[in-house]
Length: 264
Image (cartoon, rainbow, N blue to C red; front, side):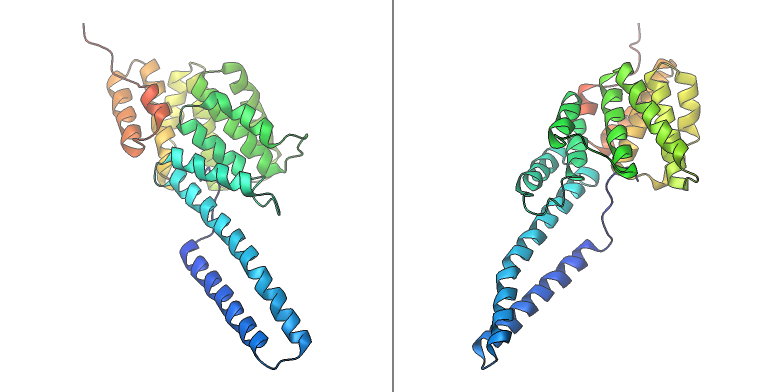
């Protein structure tokens, strides 16, 4: 719900696209080897020259989708970072992924407990002053909000929370998913600002049915953090354990454990 969404049936799409390119290649070769007119042969030659380029673009899409799946479904942030950076590095011609991949890169850095690199990474990826669309502006602020929450940087947290709130307030109507997301962000903001009781109330009433694995991971983590501040150490440890079970390879969780109060 909170990350880049891909079209359904991606595997089926890939099969159909490859079958189409194979068909184009066979038909073009038949034309070139036949007694067709020169105009038809020239067109067939152009098609044949285009196929490798189109296959390369399809391969990049495959790598990007693979990286997205590694991040959101498979709990493989290191592999996601490697594959996303490959896509960014090779996206020189059409620049299809320049506005999407840096955010995926940022989420992978967050899971690898490298939140301090996220702001610099976004600045490098968008070297010129970038005019974000509403969607990209939100994605940018939300990622930096999460980075600030991970680092415990209250100043950056406040700055990005206010920007996110401004974006939400410009929307005439919010879908159910966006309302849930807004409440989740409010709960994280409260937890990071020491408002434990308010944060817990927000977390308790969130509808997490639409949450995917990675979203549930951070939901459980920040909920645990609020419970720890509220001295409910058993609940905090239980929620933290759930987060780790969902994402055992998440270095942020491992490096910032939430444990029950030691018995005297």
